[in-house]
Image (cartoon, rainbow over all chains, first blue to last red; front, side, top):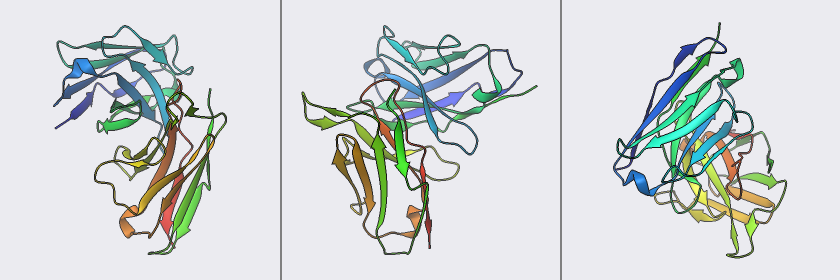
Length: 118
Length: 113
């Protein structure tokens, strides 16, 4: 079955960097675009970024553009999110998500918590 | 960016009664070329990731009980739970996937009256 397992979250100071990973299994990873979605504590869902199946196309939310970089390594079945110049408002649970038939999110990981605090 | 606005923000319904959540997009999410509305609904329970309920505005995902239904087109959409069950207590989100950034509504918290 499809599994998405995020890792790499933690507590980080403002202005520092963090890299999240999402290990995918149970499907042909190289056939699917993959997304990051985040949720600040007690708040709603915010789409963060998407990368095409082969990594050639990427799109970002305005709130992270220029600071976050989405990438993937299909040989390792892994999705990444490099987060630079972190801000307090980036504090959230970060989910990776896989679409099915259209860019709606049929499969979700359990999420990894990123806390940006001094 | 397409702004998604849900109403109400919270809702209390008696068990067995109908619950209705509305979602309005700031521009149409209907693709004329395929006549599909690029609109999904999710359910999220505390401590869990969201769960897909409805896509293409009205197609129930596999395993979703038939008391959940989606309707609407263009800019106005509705999620209906025909007979509320205790396990339906959750926050519900709509999402447009017509264009990036793929935006969500602010969420509607559904409780038992």
